[in-house]
Length: 156
Image (cartoon, rainbow, N blue to C red):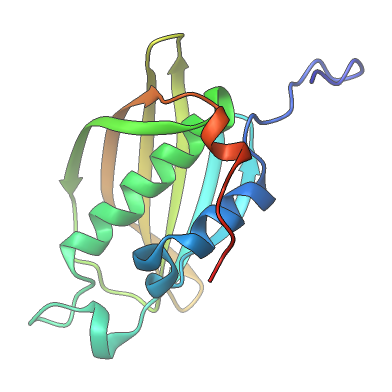
């Protein structure tokens, strides 16, 4: 739907639908990642660090969780443009160790086409009110058909 006054279209997938999706995904639910912002072509998320089970042997956020945060945010941003999606390709560059109390992602659609959506994601470590860029990612996301979003199973 398009807002006549602003010309902006509503996201294909809403924040409430993302929250339902997050509730039914066991791994996503385990991480405790939260939605911060959802707009068409833009998603921001935040993860609070649990040192006892999210760090690697140096005490940094595990790289697998950095990748998860970037991939999840990229897919969500793409879904705001085209509905249900699957990641086709994903590239992640680590810039600094994941040292912080929480981690913030900002995923922005670079281009949304009929066959694929290209997304850039910045991952930041948050500590004492400051953010430090620790990773950047690009992803190619494929539309999977919007029907699956409408028939989500109930959360457990």
